[in-house]
Length: 409
Image (cartoon, rainbow, N blue to C red; front, side, top):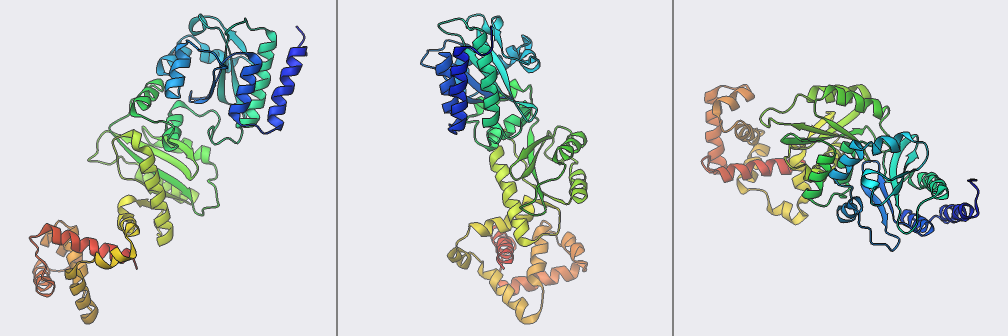
């Protein structure tokens, strides 16, 4: 059959016009579904649904129904794609083809990939309903995929063509596309990913906001090669590194590796607190951005900043000006006034004592003074401020007051 048939020419005119009219992705797929008189599903390369258009039909198909319910092809479907060789065929065949066996036995479907910048960015399926597909349908599908490639090239939903299933999970979590723990668990099964108990985010950013990260792909490769169980995602803010480990008492030995890479590439690394539930990834990714913003504002010289390093600045940022006036502890203000008048460092002494677990021995060693000298200073602090060293709440309030006031200066 000749490629240029009246039906094909009409379809080409409609699809190209959709591109010229700058229709949305959903509008383009809908026009294609009308032309085919058949339902169409379009997913990312990691099987998240971009568009689902039933063309007015009630589609009784397990792949379709799961996608309609969850927004993804299910792990069972992904397994079938792999085990039946469907994924291999779609990726290796140059042209669209009709699947009539396995998953496609009850409802045959045309399958094809969408290539963006040389990599598969999306998959399309056109479901046969009231008439058998022909050569014109296959040629139309190839044309549709070429037009879709133009639509998707700068689409933030795609982000990076050729994204792996693991990267896709991270991308969808931080963009809030995964809406429940049930869907996340199915995504993990589809990716054959069994996470370890604890996670930690490290956001790698350039020195200046307007700069990108040079050699980001090579840097990702080095991180993945050097850090076991790490995952790297090209995010809007830079590179998001997800660390995953079992032992929470001993943090994984990634610090030196990341610091060395930061020094080599003139980058900065912002590290979240550890967390246990991958579903909360966005919260901890956002905390990395908070760390970055505070570190830039404070002009921290260190290339690696942990949440603990900026927690008091973060707390200060949540207080209104009125709250900042009412928050400081009276005992702290009294001792601070004494320090200012007599050029002493009693506030710093008490902070050191608290930071070292209220141990006179450890605090005196940290301050390079004799233990007896430390004890005398603590007695003097009690006398001036009236603080009760047996009252943990008072000690916590004292310490928080000092840190928050310092970060408010």
